[in-house]
Image 1 (tube, helix red, strand yellow):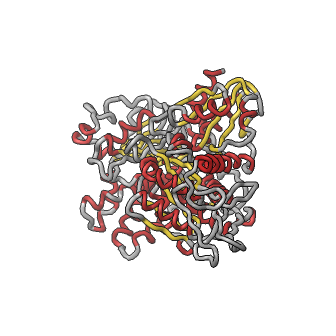
Image 2 (cartoon, rainbow, N blue to C red; image 1 turned 120 degrees about the horizontal axis):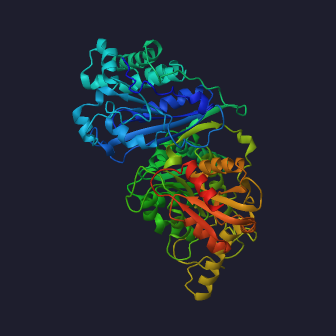
Image 3 (spheres, one colour; image 1 turned 90 degrees about the horizontal axis):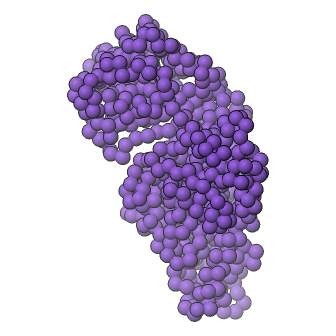
Length: 625
């Protein structure tokens, strides 16, 4: 039976206090299947028509010691019937599968929130591993919350007893039992999960049927048990969204589809050269499943080989793409200079993580902006753009492809660990709405002499693109400086000055071909503007709307094109008395804005490995005002 320790607590008033949205966090050992549980609950939530945003948060260790604090894995989902922009500041419901999960995540749970705990895991050994002297389920320390504690482990063993599984294999079904309870709690159908289990386990009927039995048992527990106090069933109405065909995507999935779409819009085959690294590996995995769309994926022996293979593919007439995270981008730096010198189209994706060095492999950060804009030897200008959300990765990837091809240049596309792993509903666009990306391979043979591969378009300064083997157009490009007039090797001071100035002017000139900066929320001038980039979009948007509702004169600008900046950005920023820049680093965009526009931008820095909370930005806004 369930145990509600605080009988005099008020019922969980989700429907009163949060009329159209709820935040749920599943937390347990890194072997408890919390990511899988959260992922399947996300699918069921999307099928129910709710808007949603997720935040998978897992340790860097492949398998940390069971029951330890640093082995806790969590999955948070924020869903509702209104627009959802973030994974939520504080969980309303915390599902804790062991003491360590409770200890790590309790500080985030809102006061009065609901804890669902597996009391079967709160034995002396697990309590000791988590640093508890006493059992928190019994000592009254959870009085500020509502507690529902019952033996999920025993319930699971009972549910799958008929299948004759060993104790270890039987307990692996705990996550399905927990998922079944969550599906009941929020009125979700079980059929999509049952269909998924049937497909996942295929001919292994024993494991399939055991997991389905655990799922059904958890659901039935919610339906039939005499649960006192806090456990209720909640139903949220579907979100009012634009009609269309929707699917749930992670940032990595949307990014892979956007890259393929960009290559298709250009009529080019795509080559991806990558090397496994967290959190960028998901892009390689996703693209490897899209070979029927003209995608070649190559897992290289190291980061240098990965980018060099992509450069070679671009030289041969494909769209070259490579990807990594901060440490791997550092290893690619010399080859990025080669791509700048050869002026070949190349998309470089950086899924940022906490640094420096190995840093926080599975935690998010935005600390590679300096690296993207400045981090190469010599004067090596590269355009930099950033995606703002998982679904925005699709359009950001197409834009990166467009700039790379239109200007014959490498382009850096910044995402981060949060964007790569998080999921949200995506309205699948009509590709007819996207303009094609024009590509012209030079085929005209000069009447005399040899072709100059660095002959340029006078408007964009892009050089011509010649496929190797084109009759009469034998040419040479490479990392050694070439003559502006002939394309031959030329070390002369005058030529190097001219080529350096030309490469810079080409990238600076991109500002004339990108959209003007828009204001996301608020007026085009006023007391305060909050300027962000990348995955801070959701919390900034919500914080600004809250502050405007309180009567504050505040606006929101979110920058996609980080280098070069949009042509009107400086004038726009000067229209505000104060500028606040929240970012998950120690103030890198703030420094760029001060440098380029001499504005007194103030930083709001966070480098904890966690995304901003809305409340943190609201407090900073009101503090400045």
